Amino acid sequence: MSLPGESGAAAEKADWRRRLLPRWRDLDPQVLAAAAARALDHLRCTDAWRRAALVFTYVNQPWEFPTRGLVEAAWAEGKRVAAPVTCPGGVMEARAFMSWDDLAPAVFGILAPQADHCPRVPPEAIDLCVVPGLAFDRRGVRLGRGGGYYDRYLPRLRAAAVRVGWIPSQFLVDRLPLEPHDARVHLVVTEEGIRWCGGSGNGSGGGSATGPDASGAP
Image 1 (tube, one colour):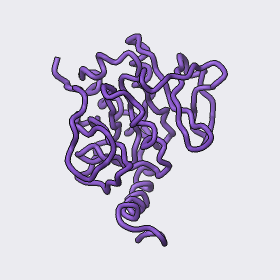
Image 2 (cartoon, helix red, strand yellow):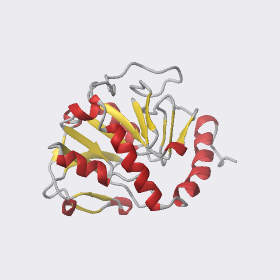
Image 3 (cartoon, helix red, strand yellow):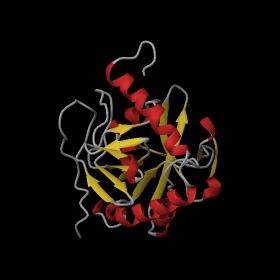
Image 4 (cartoon, helix red, strand yellow):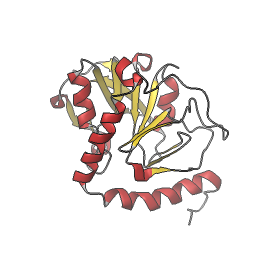
C-alpha cells in the first residue's frame, strides 16, 4: 500500500518503512547491545577503523543499533569522535564531543553535542562515517526514515572517507529501492561480519561504484 501522490521508488520506500519500523521497536535492547558489540569487533579489524583519526557517528535512540560501545572504543584508541547536529533548513553538521556529558536532547529528542562548547567539524575532516538506517542492501543502498539528512550530508565528505552502514544482520536485505539522490555506503557491518559494497556517491540505479580501501586485511 502507498500513500496518495507517491509512485515508484518513493512508494516502495514508504512500504518498507511501514513494515520495518514495528520490527525495530519490538527488538530486545539487550539483544541489540550484544549484536552491536559483535559488530564492533568486526569493524575494529578493518583498515578503515585503524586509520581513522576522526569518527563521525550517530548517537542512537533506544530502538536503534547501539553506538555507545563504538564511541567509547574510539575514545580509548585516541580517536576524535563527532556526532550529528540538526540545524534549521534540514541541514546537518558534525560537532566533536569528548564526554557523554557534552550531549543534550535536541531536535526529535535525539542526543546531540551542545553547540556552545562542542566545536564544529568540517566534512572534509571526517575519516570514517557510521551511518544509521532502517535497512541496507548488499549494494550499500540505505533506507532511512525519510528526512534526507544523510543523503544531503554524505556527498560533502571527501572521497577517501569511508561510509559504514551499521545495522543488525536481519535488516541487511538483498535489494532496496534506489533514487538518484540516495547516498550509499561503502560497507555494511553487522554482528555476523562485514559486507563490502563499494558504493560511493549517490544512487544512479546501476552497479556499485569504486570506493576507498576499507579492507579488513592487515
